[in-house]
Image (cartoon, rainbow, N blue to C red; front, side, top):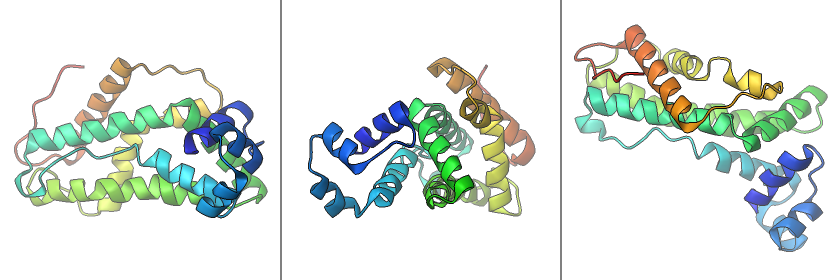
Length: 199
């Protein structure tokens, strides 16, 4: 069902209806209303599902070392770049921006809460584990996350939202992720440094 929502957003932007989703997902409208409540509930679930694809990697908080921290940060950065540059995220974010500007719905707030803010809460424990292990030095975890977020995203999201046909193949995404993490360690690294891999 959520795949159907994303496909329809890519195809038609804001023309999404419960009828169209039911038809595309081969289910009844009653099922959609039962599971999601209304169109806004369906969009909120879609946003949460899309944002859940951005993960901070697997690590043992008690035994984290410089290389494990780098690997997890790179995994997060690559996941996030892949998600925000996908056709589905671009379509979803365009609709959210339009709704935020027009007051048509609170989709913009839903995208912020379940996207950017939820992703931040997912990564902050990793940053704090790095600090506890003496690998990172910072005062405020939110400010540190925002800096990392900026190093990773650069201008990618605004460019794709405004129609730049920016192509980010897997190799380019991995290279961008490594570069962002290198820069992050220059700003916040402490103690033993991880091995820097070539770009």
